[in-house]
Structure formats: C-alpha cells, structure tokens
Length: 127
Length: 508
Image (tube, rainbow over all chains, first blue to last red; front, side, top):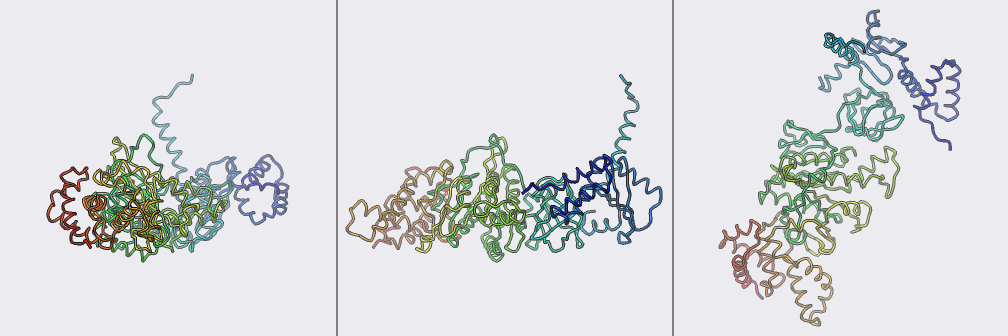
C-alpha cells in the first residue's frame, strides 16, 4: 500500500500551487480527484482548514469575522491591522448568539472579544 | 555605519512593544474533530507541547485534557473529566501550563483526587505551592546512599528485609494475601513511633468502600494527620488512574525537598498499567506484549526513580516507595511484575499458601529480598537477627520432613523445632506494629533458645508475657534499647533473665 500522505503535506502542496499562479479550479480538481481516489473525501473540511493555514503562513490570510451587528469601516481596518499578513480576505457573518463584540478567526488563531466568551470564562471562574 | 538614535531608543522600544501588543488578543485555537472513550482528537494547535493542558470549550463549561499524541495532522488528548459534554466542533485552547497539583502541609489529613481537589467534603485546599505532576528525578550528585531505617513495625520485614529511607521496596502477591495490610501497618507505625515520616497513600482504581474503610482506620489510629490520600475509584476515567501516582509523588516530593521524609504507597501499579494500556490503545499506539504499549516499563521506572534519598547539600530529605503489584496465581514472571521487580530495590513476596496456613503476614522468606536496606537496618535489630532469614528459609525446606518426626537426626530436629518457633513468633496481628525493643526482645529470646521448652502453640503468649514483664520492670532499659543502638551485654542479660522467667509459665 502506498504511504498515506499527511493532510499537512497535501495542504502545503496545494497552497504552493495556488501561490505560484496555477488556476484555482485546476488545483482543486486535482485535489478532489486525489481525495476521491484515496477515499479521503470525509477529510475535505479539514484539508480546507489546513490549506488556509498553509496560505496564512505564506502571507495570505483568510479571516472569519463574527459579530452580532454589521461592521463599520474603522472596525474593519482595525481588524486588518490586528491580523496582519500581506493580503487579507474577509468573510463576515452576523451571529446574534455572540451577544456583542467581535470574534476574528484566522487559521489556527482566534481573537475573541465577544460577550459570550466573557460569560463562558466567568462561568468557568477564570476571570 | 548608520547612526544610532540613542535619544529615540526609549520611544522605539515603546512603539515596538505597542506593535506586539496589538496581536496580544490573538490566541491559538484548535477544534475537536472526534471524541470518544475519554479521548479527544484535535485539529490545529500545532504549538501544543507534550503533556500540556488543553481546555475544551463545551456547551456546559470547560473540560480539561492533556495532549499525549502529537502528530502531523492532529493531536490525541486524554480528557480529565467526563466526555459527555464534549462534541466535535468544540473550540480547544492551550492553558499554557503542564499539569500541576497543589502541594504542601495543607494537604495533610485530606483525601484528594489526582488534581488535588478535595474528595472528603472538607473545605477547599489553599496550598501555597504547586508541584509538577511529571517531573524529572533527582540526578546522581543530588543523591546519597540509603542509610536510615524506615521501620515498618512488622517484625518479619524489619528483621529480615529491612527497608531504608529512600528505598523502593515492592510488595507483591496474589489477591487477598495482605499486601495492603503491610502498607497500612507501616503507615500506622510512622505515627506510633513518632518518626515524623509523612504518608502518601495513592489508591489507583481501588473500590471506594475500601478507601473509606482505610480512612476510617487511619483516623482511629491517629495517623491521618500525617497522611495524604490520593484516591481514584474504578468509575474514574483512565486518565485519572494514570495521573494518580505521579500526582501523589509530586505531593510527597514537597516534603522530601523540604528536609523531611515521606513514604509513598502505590496501591496498586497493576491497575495503573492497565489504565495506561487502555489510554494507549484508545490513542491508537501499537500494542506489545499482553497488549501493553512499548513504554510501559518507562511508565513505572520514571515514577519510582523519583523516590530517593537526597544528599546533605539538598537537605537530606527522603522519599521511600512501597509500590504494590497483584499477581495472578503467584506468577511473578508475568510482564508487569518482572518489570517492577527489576526497577525496585527488592520485593516482599506474599504467599497464598502461607496466608491460609495462618502464617500472617504471609511473607515468603525465600523469594523476598531487600537489596539496599542492609546498611539502613537498625543496629539493635541487625545485631540479633543475623541468621534469621537463612534459618527460616532452611526450615521451610526441611518442614516437609517434619512429619517423619522421630526418624530425623538431632541436628535436623532442632532446626525444625527452632524454625517452627520462629515462624510462630513472626506471626503478627494486623494494626499492631511493634517497636524496636519489642522486636529485639522477641527475636533474641527465640534465637537464643530461651523459648525452646515452650510449646509452639504457646509462643505468642510467652512473647506477650515477656514484653509485659520487660515494660513493667525495665522501662528505662527498654527506652534505651528503643533508640536503636546495638544492645550491650547488660541489656541482653536483662532480656535473657526476663525471657527465662516468662517462659517458665508456659512450659509443658
């Protein structure tokens, strides 16, 4: 049996190809074929996370911003500064369950300034 | 060369710090991908260290876990609590510490779990110090040879297999042969003889009713004030059973490092190995012999290596260990027993046959040994128990001939007679540890043949009479003897006289 290729190696390879300018569609088609061939389609979500992490290491950061209310421009800029990186792509989501404040997820890291997080911490008596 | 802007240094540094601080709120997170059987698999958190504590944010609160499998794509972590609230998708954070437990005198008299949380319904433990659960053992230079006695109060052990402070002596035997009883008697003796040795009893997967009974007994005997009990039951997660001995050792090490003496009892390491096997298999580590993982030897060797006698520079404290191992049908060549036998400095082997013959404690004279305790033996006991072990072993070999009675030559007959009396003498009731003078007087009387005319059945009565007489008539002499120095001729004369007169009442 061929040696199993780790998700991390797979992600690094995909990230390298994307940054080298190979078309996204072609790269993802190859990845999809590989996952189907090795029966690892169940790992697709994790592979995407790993690719995002690999891209972030190389300066291309994807940030998920979750807040209870829509963001304004100054906040977006502040978040851009916080996250750093050469290029920044942002996905925004409104989630009333965070109650207030903002949560920024970048690959492997999180800034959690939401009220919900503070309440959880209080509950665990960590504040 | 560029000009250094000395005047701007302070401002530049402040800016640099401010620049770093803007990223301060960013913390590393991972996500639970799978969970089950007390093990969680986590994606992300690439900077997690081995044995580092992770916090899993569940809908019902925070559950802690510690990272044991660090792999390229995921982390295998063992949960320190129930896995019912933990679900795939939960956020995981690093706590930033390795596992620590509270240590110090505040724990004395308490029953705690392996994380130092009280289980006895008492107030919260406000310890001033914490100790690392996993800690490296003291090095060569920090140690000294074992030279002070740790009296167990059990005559058979103190006379034949003496234990020194800093020694690791294994107690091994089948179920129901009195292994725990020896450990408990040793703890009781520390209080009775006022040795100042702190006891740490680690119950690994023991029935909670048994632990409750033990605590009750220790309270009755007045030992609880100098005892810490680390308790885990059969219903606790395997991670807790795995951590218990390390956590207990951290608590004992506090006393060792503060110029005191502590005694560790691990009851028992067989269950510990089984708990570790469960964890390892669930973490998908390859199984080896008897399905134990490859590092099961290291599991126990790194634990027991922490018991030591410290050098004078480090305060001369000590940590003695009495690990307990349960065998199946007396098989000491199984995997875990041979491992622990080779790690420890000797073993006390308990035999089922002896136990049911009424010879209790059921210590086998032939298979038991103490490899380093000789130097540590109390001089008084050493001076009178020289040939005890050899005589007893030879007697057990000859005992099968005893049924031939009159057909034996005189020498063999006398050896059998002496052996029977010695065996009878070394029987000792539970919870009744004996002090040095009691041991010396008893062994001396039988060894010198002063009880040769007393029938075997009446040896214990004669011994009791002797001890009562000595204590009532020669209290000061016995106090001197109790200090442990080699008794002089005068003192031995006193015992001899008393023994002869005590024996008179019980002769046939």
